[in-house]
Length: 106
Image 1 (tube, rainbow, N blue to C red):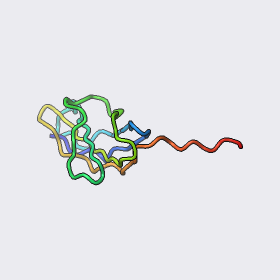
Image 2: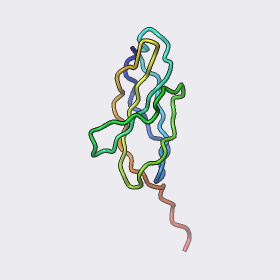
Image 3: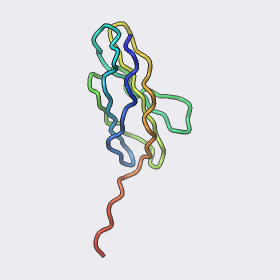
Image 4: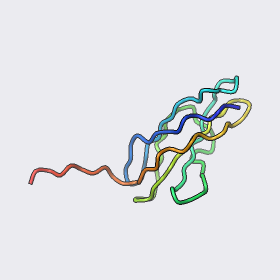
């Protein structure tokens, strides 16, 4: 089984979606990585929930249907033909909210 990837990074945030990116794990377990499962949790929750049911080959995902003003964390697991590896460390928490617009001229 693959080792854990590094913590994923949240690159884009709005009030209902976030884009999460991650790198391949250093240890592929001796077999090629076939896909990734991304998990999310609300910061105050203890339960991680898989976002995708079947592994995806990409190393980025747009996560939708988030609750505005809630704080989320993400982690990722890599899979190869042997099985699913251990989860990455969690991402830094991010609050689902639209980016602040700089104030326009008066």
